Amino acid sequence: MNFSSVLIGSENPKRLADYYRGLFGEPNWDEGGYTGWMIGSGGLSVGPHDEVKGKNSQPGRLILNIESDDVRSDFDRFKAAGAQVVREPYQMEGWEGWIATLSDPDDNYFQLMSPMSGEPTGD
Image (cartoon, rainbow, N blue to C red; front, side, top):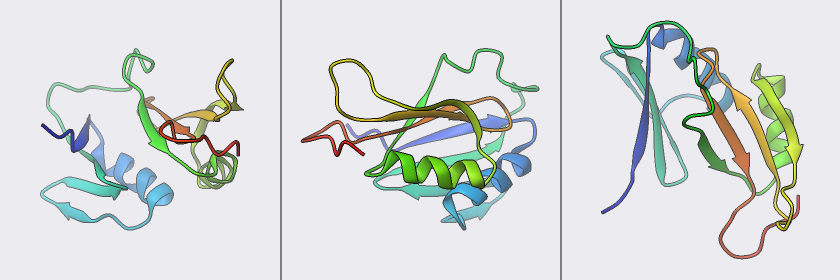
């Protein structure tokens, strides 16, 4: 098996696509109301979903992790592009890597994280 992508359903997928475009640049695909980006070896896409209404009422239930060799720099870039800050970069006890938590306009959480395989970079 291979986990390949995540689809974020939204009542307003255009707003989310515009938001993520500001973070990740032009999408790799944009067709039929679905917009997607390749981030490393995984895909992130947004699109309409008839069972989704409004903002996420439990944003911590599912958190997307995006690996970054420079969490602080990417955090600053995302923040400047309009990302909503949930938690500034921090380190967990017992791990030298960094984590920063942000959210999109639908209140879906995502985190920038130092690589967990091999040696953490210690941004």
